[in-house]
Image (cartoon, rainbow, N blue to C red; front, side, top):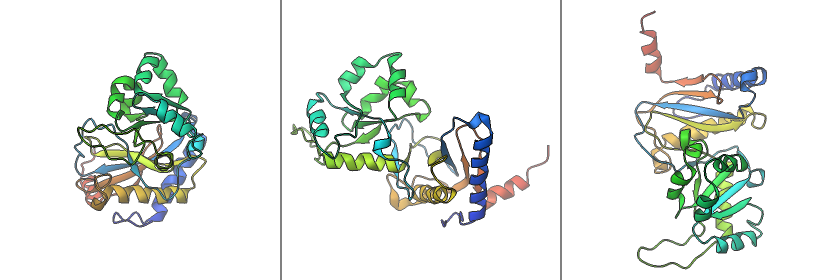
Length: 269
């Protein structure tokens, strides 16, 4: 691994990941943890509030495929044209467990039924024209702590023109490419904090080497200003990098030199 953060100390990163995998195997408290995350602490807050759009980060070692997930597609009203087009095309005929209009989503899933929706689908994607309506419909179950945020997709390459009615279009190949990208890569959501957490591996699926490659991809993408607006969001440099699962302790793999020096100067309690 090599980045400008000197994550090329492969031994440190490897040891931290191996330790996390071992603890996951022996600690009953972690038995339900499925994913490995990298946590990046920045020198300054990102300063972005109320943003509910996941951004894709390309990875060297892919996460999963559409065929392994139950996927819900939310479209504008009416949904029949999109259902027929995507269901009858070989590129997308088996990609979605359900295709539903935003109006029917609101009508069918309320209260306790939202819990069932949450359990039934691994991934929710929504037409960019209705994505902004979903926080009010899906509520805290999906949006609290960014648990299962819907991804944005475009159903065709057509550009939206102001004050001009557009012909309905749907391009199955284009939709398929977007869904595959969402599934195989990872993502993050901008926030108002100086900490971002990103999934970089799955226990039992990714090797330590593959997770190391993915960590490198994530740190590089978020640090590289040329990747804006999707990437390059780190402000004030990277202070520290950790790996962890949902319920494990955070294991350090990088600390900025001045952070280490400041800790040495702290008085003993």
